[in-house]
Length: 83
Image 1: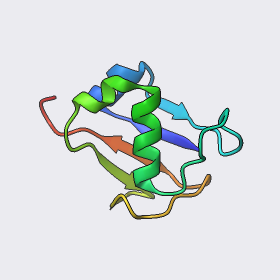
Image 2: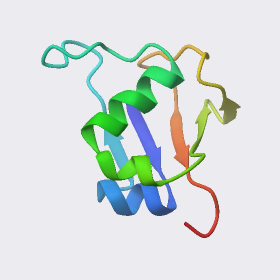
Image 3: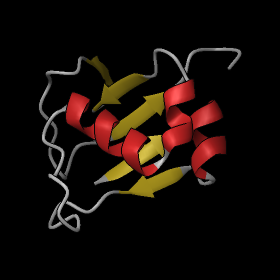
């Protein structure tokens, strides 16, 4: 799963894109929803917790925490302006 990063999320992770494995995550649950993906990313990159209200887009549409995600979806993390 590839995630596009913008603004502060890109600065924290250090790259404009991030690949998240969709198979065996060293004992971690594979993210199947936007909410699970956010928790996974925050556990991997704790600095992301400092950004309030990061929006997630799935296939160019804003998504809620309960929306499902798949390995072929285009996912983007969009921080609020001025972070």
